[in-house]
Amino acid sequence: MSDQEIIKTYKLEKQIGFLLRQVMQRHNNIFSERMKNKLTTTQFAALVKLYEIGTCSQNQLGRHIAMDAATIKGVVDRLNKKNLVQISTDESDSRRLLVSLSPEGKDLAEKLIPLGQEITEETLRPITQANRNKLLDILQNLT
Image 1 (cartoon, rainbow, N blue to C red):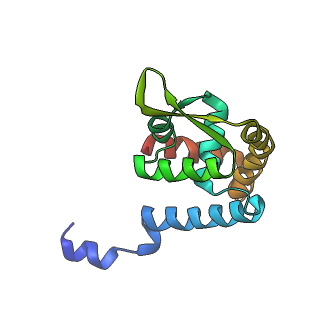
Image 2: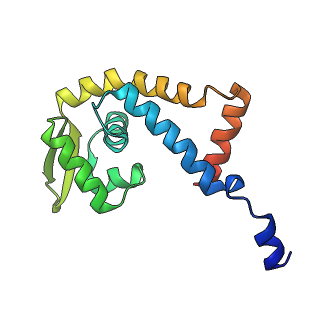
């Protein structure tokens, strides 16, 4: 197909980036409405991952939740200010910061994880269970 043919047939509404952005906007709106300003999506991801894996380095946490070093630092700092995480220095490497849930963070994670599941369900509500499974499989293959 020539460049001119591509230009003539290109429809923004059919492009993956455009569609993913629309879906993400919908999901973020549902998340914000349900979370009621308790946490941002990135703070929620960090809290849930720490609940799942326990104490880890700040950089490792960032890798687990697909955030660069600068972004995860800001997320951890904000969670620390909310007393939801504890930060300590690794005894074997003083340059490494370890992050763990505080008791308040653990309690909040236990309360919010079911809400996170409800948010996922609401985001995916317009499609059948079979299509939900297919969509999640496809998206995981793209990461």
